[in-house]
Image 1 (cartoon, rainbow, N blue to C red):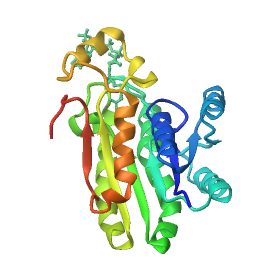
Image 2 (image 1 turned 60 degrees about the vertical axis):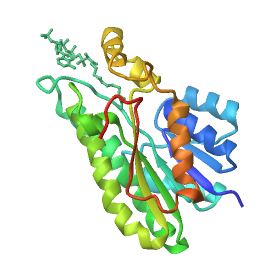
Image 3 (image 1 turned 180 degrees about the horizontal axis):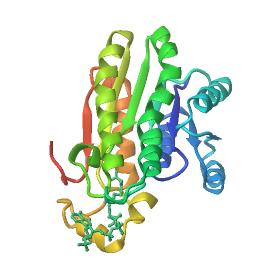
Amino acid sequence: MARVALVTGGSRGIGAAIAKHLKAEGYSVAASFAGNEEAAAAFTEETGIPAYKWSVADYDECVEGIAKVEADLGPIEVLVNNAGITRDAPFHKMTREQWSEVMDTNLSGVFNMTHPLWNGMRERKFGRIINISSINGQKGQFAQANYSAAKAGDIGFTKALAQEGARAGITVNVICPGYVATDMVMAVPEKVRDSIIATIPVGRLGEPEDIARCVAFLASDDAGFVTGSTLTANGGQYMT
Ligand code: CAA
């Protein structure tokens, strides 16, 4: 039986590449999305991967959404916590809403998705949790006090939970992508973006598939001894 994988924020950008890659590797894949119905419909049409609408920022919606996916596909064995948003602003201009929206989605969202799945994975003695953090959770970023804090939180969450999952056959890892050519990065003003690319040793933005391949490895049986790790994929922009 194909393993079931759920990718949050899986209908666009890095998430869509992950979902497609896992499907190509034989997983039975579902994607969740929060808002963009048109993109989700086009994604499902193109890939045949079902997309379910709910907000990872809402615990009850996660419980309901997960139940629907499991009723359709079976128990979720691989969870990719990819959904994320930016609300960039220099701190002196950052509002409480900008802070909370980013924390609710990028950090609490990871709790909200992982918590309802945890006991099932423990009982079945198998699970793969793969959290998508960011280079900016490692190094910080001007105008991203909210995003950098949440993404750094994802790294700490991963390391704590990896210790709890280890004896139950559950691995928990985090990937820190650098700047990848997605809508999120393309929304950065061009001049700023060019100055960022100039600091990437490989001389280009990442491709979503660069990250999808990392996820596929961490999800695989080959990665059973890899847990609590932070996999950095940023073209050499920041080395930890
Ligand atoms: N370091 C130091 N100073 C900086 C700076 C930096 N990196 N970036 C901007 N500044 C300065 C500007 O030069 C400007 O200074 P002056 O006032 O002296 O001219 C000031 O900060 C910004 O002032 P503005 O009033 O123009 O700022 P704003 O309210 O319009 O905000 C911004 C602009 C949000 C900072 C915009 O420049 C921006 O979006 N920057 C990019 C932030 C970024 O990299 N976000 C990452 C998004 S991608 C992502 O998050 C995915 C991932 O995981 C990698």
